[in-house]
Image (cartoon, rainbow, N blue to C red; front, top):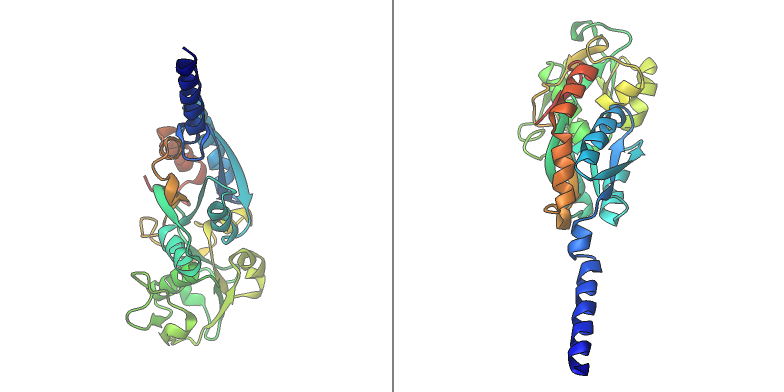
Length: 271
């Protein structure tokens, strides 16, 4: 009887150890997560996501970032459970540069990039020698150069700009208007717009600065292109129940309707 009791105690202790182990069932079934998002439109969208997720038993705490470098660093370090601010090309560039073990688990929205100007109403009005601001990070800078090329303002070297090979201003082989391409931090571009002829600005920063994709742009990216934004998690968490609940909450009809009504085409559901 004594040995049987000891055996039962040992079994119970083993069960508790498994339940509370970092990779055990309890960890997989956690019901509270931290998600990193960008300042701006994502904040209002995630208020709706939170409500939907709560009905599925998942509590979401959002952590707002004002740049594009910290959310992946925080996720990789374990300070976040997920983030929702980037597209796949940007994530791929960060993985290549920093070795992150981060993977996409679901699509969110497409935020079409625009070339904004306070001085000109069309591409044709840009004078020779005009100064154009573009993002200084590899992925978004590449995206800006592709948009300038699509608008007929520049031509890039063959083999760059697509398929993961990021273009830089050094890859411009034809620039008939002698445009001056100035690389700036993405967050600085809206503040610098008064001093520039035009600037490539990401949607979230444009939104925060009160700029309209419909009214203030002279060129706009295809809203259904390859730059759809994603929810990302650490590779080890991609199959966790909470990750699936997060994606399901974001990709709900309630969130879709909110995006379509609130942003009126400046953001497009990608799911």
